[in-house]
Image (cartoon, rainbow, N blue to C red; front, side, top):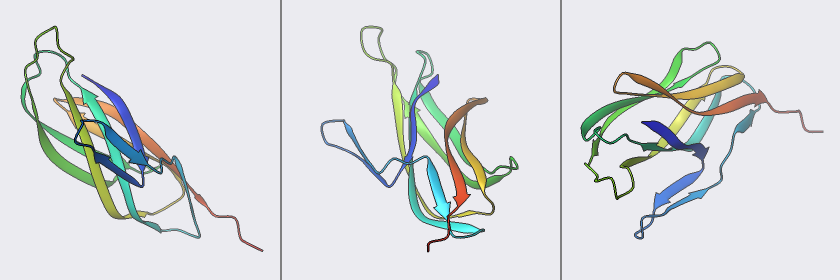
Length: 134
C-alpha cells in the first residue's frame, strides 16, 4: 500500500463520474501571529492498496507540529474490495474537512497516516508569520 495522492486545499468533492474536483491547493499559510487558527481546510489523500489487503481497515490521520506532537487526530475505517489482476488496484479516497485547526507556533506541520501498522507520509504545510503591511 502507498499514498498515491496527498494534498491540502480549500475544497474537494467526488463527482458522479468518479473523478475528484479539488480547489485551492496550498502548501504554506501566513498568520498575523501565533497561536494561529485556520477556519477550514481539507486534507485529500488517495491510498492505493496491495492486492490481498481487502477487508475493513482502520486508519488514523495525525497533523504533527514542528515539535512532532499531534495537534489534530482523525480516526476512521475504510472497506477495501478484492480486485482481480485485470482491474486497477483498490484505492481509498479520503476527503477530510478540518475545521478550526490551531497552529501553536510557526514551522512545518506534517500529516501522517497510520494503516495496518504502517506510517504513510501525507502532505505538509509550512506556517509563517505574515509580513506587516505598510
